[in-house]
Length: 178
Ligand SMILES: C[S@@+](CC[C@H](N)C(=O)[O-])C[C@H]1O[C@@H](n2cnc3c(N)ncnc32)[C@H](O)[C@@H]1O
Image (cartoon, rainbow, N blue to C red; front, side, top):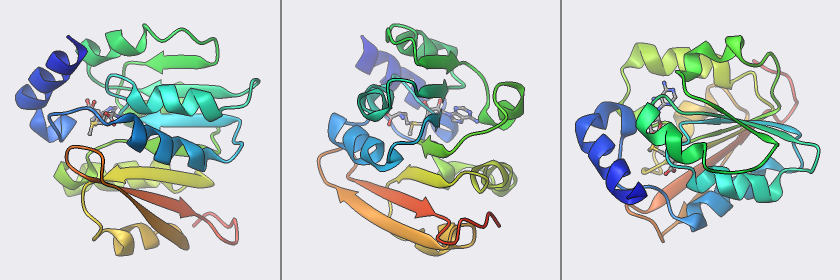
């Protein structure tokens, strides 16, 4: 049912969902292990929650995870995850200021490649304030784009996913937020 809902939403709103299949737990783990002890993690584009569940495994006991998902039909799967550290926000990430004022780490599944340039720019304006930014993509060719905002960018490849995934792990080396 969950996979079917994701497929249907992916077909109906491809420019928002960006794929037809939710991520595997291998992608979730590869992203989650990069939060490196961060206490406040914000997830962008949580979908049905495969990455959310993995982040909760790495989040400290006194940590907080705020997971944004714009699609109400997908949010209902996130609300089934029982964990007091998790807050599900069914809204556009561009409204983040209404829900939290500081965050150390952003883990994002947003399909940036299919967004309009203006929307992508608005999202980068939020993302670059984080110390650690982890982004799911399906191409290895975006390193330059992320280097505009973060001095240190690493790419991890996860073949066990449809399509195979590239995880961009971005940090401010000098911790100076540009
Ligand atoms: C590629 S899917 C990734 C879903 C999930 N993280 C995974 O890996 O399976 C992208 C998700 O971002 C959500 N999304 C797109 N634009 C958004 C926005 N502006 N704010 C919040 N969520 C958004 C979509 O509804 C979709 O569920």
